[in-house]
Image 1 (cartoon, rainbow, N blue to C red):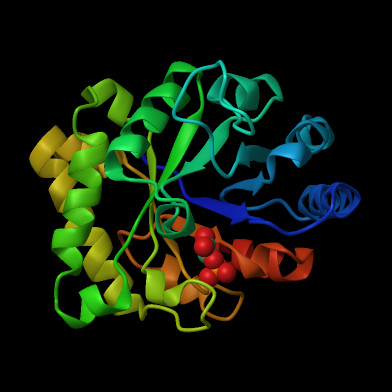
Image 2 (image 1 turned 90 degrees about the horizontal axis):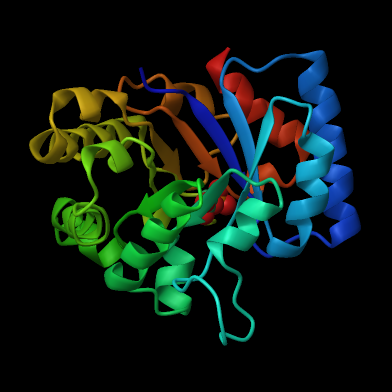
Length: 252
Ligand code: PGA
C-alpha cells in the first residue's frame, strides 16, 4: 500500500548551524508527539551529513534537493547520487520546477538523474507540474503527461515502484496561492490514471503522490483528505518547526 508522506524542502535557506538547530528541534517535537505519516526533510548538500547524523535514530528521514546527472568525474561543483547516499540520506528531490526553470533541467537530464538515484539506493521524489499559462490554456494534463513519460516511463515496473511523485503546480509554489482541494484531487487522480495506463492499476495504487505549493497548517488537512493526495512537499512552512508540525498534523 502507498504511504502518506510529509517532506520538507528547505531550498537555499539556513546556514549549517541553523539547519542543525532546526533538525534537532524537529526530532524532539516529533519524538514527543508521534506523526501519523512518514516525515522527511530535504536539505542543502552541505547540511546532509550533519542532519542525517542528528536524525539517525529518529523517525525523520533525510534527503537531498538535487543530484548530478553524471556518476563521477570532472564536473566541478556537482554532487553525485553516490555522494548523497554516503551521507546517510535516503531521498532526493528531482525535477523541482526551480531546477527546471532556473538551471535548464530537461526531461532527458532528469531521466539520467532518476536512474543514478535509483542505482544508488535513493528514493527520488520526482516533481511535476504546470506553469500558470499552461493551466490557463487547459494544458496541465498534457504537460504533466510529458514530464512523466519523458523522464520515468522507460523504468521497469519494479524501479517505478520506488518513485514518490510530487504534483506541484508552479503557480502555487511560494505564492500563497494554493491549488483548491478539488484541483489537487483532479490532477492527482489524472496522474494515477496515467500510471495505471503505463504500469497497471496495482502500481498506480501503490504510488505515493504528494501535493506541493503553499501547503501550510491551515490547508494541509483539507488537501490531505483527498483520496489521491498522499501528503505534501513543503517549502516555506518547513522552515519553522511549529509550521511544519502543523502540516504533519494534517494527518491527525
Ligand atoms: P512552498 O514550496 O511550500 O514554499 O510553496 C513548495 C516546493 O517548492 O516544494
